Structures are given as C-alpha cells and as structure tokens.
Length: 241
Image (cartoon, rainbow, N blue to C red; front, side, top):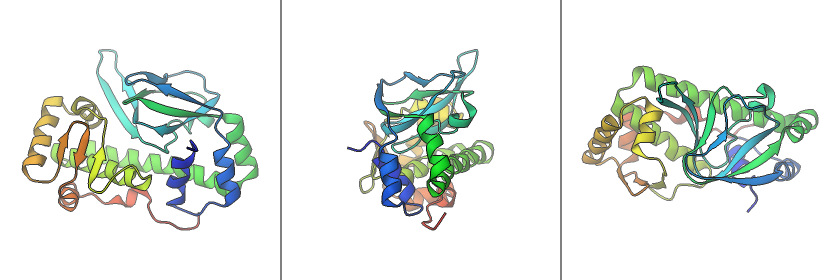
C-alpha cells in the first residue's frame, strides 16, 4: 500500500488534489519505521530533519511532568502528520509516543521544502493539515475547561469515530480503538477510576459498548447530543482551498 494513501484520502476529503499532487505525496516518503506500544517516536527537544507521517496505528503527543504525571495533548491516526510543524520549528517541546504498534513514514524536510517552493496549492493543503490540528487542540481546551467528565469522554469518542471514518478506519458503527482507559484518562485530565465510571454510565445508557479494544457506537446520535458534538471544527467541508 502507498504509505501516503491515508494522507491523500484525508486531504481529498477537504479539496481535490491533482494527479501531479497525488504523485508528489506518494513520493515524499524516504522510508518506513515501526514502533512498539509505549515507545517514544519523537523525543522532546531532539533536532529534527524530517517529519513523520502516521501510516497505521495510534500515537499521541504527550507532555511528561517531573513527578511522573502525563498529559496527552492530542491523538493521531492514520494519515496524520504527527510533527509537520517540526518542519519549521526544528524541534518539539513535547514527546510523540506510540499508543499501539505503529508504522511511520519518514519525510525529509528537504522534500517538504521543495513542495512549498514549487506547488502552492499542495502547500496550502499541508498548511490546512496543521490548521486542523490547531482546531482540534482548541476543542480539547474547551473540553478540559467546560465540559463535564461524561461530556468530555463522549466528545472525544465522537471525534475519533468521525476522524477514522474520513480515512476509512471505521466499519459501520464499530471502531477498533487501541486505547486503554488509563490513556483515555491522560487525554482527558481525569483519573482512570473516573473514566471507568463514565464508560460504565455510557454503556448503561445504551450509547456505546467498549470491549477488547473495540468501541461499538450503539447510538452515535445520542452520544453526540450528550457531548454537544458539532464536527464543524474537523473541517469536513470539501471546497477549493
């Protein structure tokens, strides 16, 4: 499989790509690296000469504190650049950590630089990718500051389901999600015990079932209402950019 295929699908959900643009994206990958669950993919502060495109699996941007506590600040799925902003920043102020076993495509910054100099529309599409990341960050801030624990967990599950649908990673009402409740707690700023109670509540309300790494969305519309989930921030409209 073309390692850039999930990225191409993600971008083409928002605007058309020309055959030449698809060909360039298919050719930007230098090599594929694999990482085990829990392995640090991009260490905080490491000088960067390439950006990493997630081909398969689940990974997170994560900030560790001196006392061992950790906050997951974003989750990345197939087709996401986990550190496209590192092209300009040259280093990250956080770690990127594998949640599951993952395959990562390595994209040299020289190839990204060539795109920015030669292909203005594709440059805008990659810029849009970073803007989508920023929009998701803002929604997470709203969740942390204003949504209840039940709303916050519901909102994140709705978000992941829609994001996976865009890249073909969800099947019907089911989503394979290799995320533990402890990791979900780290993403929501809650305790694992609190998250466990929330999942039990959502199950009792007939909204979801979560067993053995798979979430069944028994009533997605009901879950979205509970979370006041509006997918507009995921920029799903397809239009010229």
